[in-house]
Length: 285
Image (cartoon, rainbow, N blue to C red; front, side, top):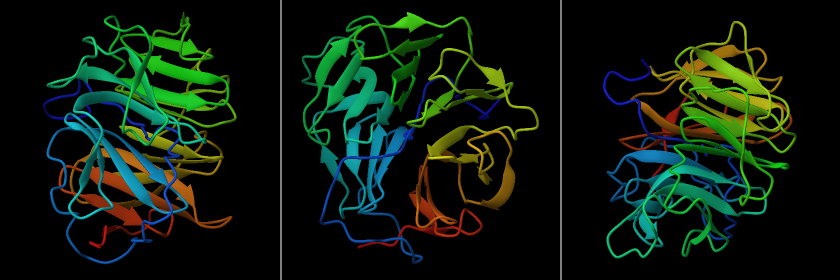
């Protein structure tokens, strides 16, 4: 089991993320070091995904209580209260999610696939409303990949196709080139064609969340040990570890050889600027 208790419902992203590109912002400072506490009012509901804008380091968390910008202090809820289970974003800043409506929402239950083009302030239903609760979502340049008991793929978020591989995916992460990683209790699986076909990755560590930043993949184990891959998830190297139980992960390049890595836990965000060798709590503003 990935977790001692609950393993049933989360995503990321992930997501992350997930491909881990987030809505644009131009005003958030670069807060990547320091030993301060997380932003005030850090969301207490289950974290289901994370998106980080690599240009500004703006961090969005998709949670049981909606979407939160945790680079603000206090952390700011964005948009309506929706239990955002599956969550991912694309390189143009479009957000995709799934889950259940919160109080006051007129969305059906489950919400199916929903999308936002205004940083999560408003959401629009795309498909499978009242039918599907994707617990994990990923995006590539070819479309979307979702898991709701089976892997489904879609070129446009409207029409979905079941794949031949019935993977029990816990978390999905995608890259623009069509690479997709799926974590399962049996090990890591990889697709090179946007989720149509899958193969188990031999020798991979047992990861609970992964993210892709170009050809670099980053993953974290249930115990918080971080691993990196320079060949998009085919081979892995152990790095450092975080404190606490991981809930989502994101990464972005600093330069050609170094990546910044963010890992969300129930207590806050930990960040590394040295490819995951060391982590510190996100500095408060």
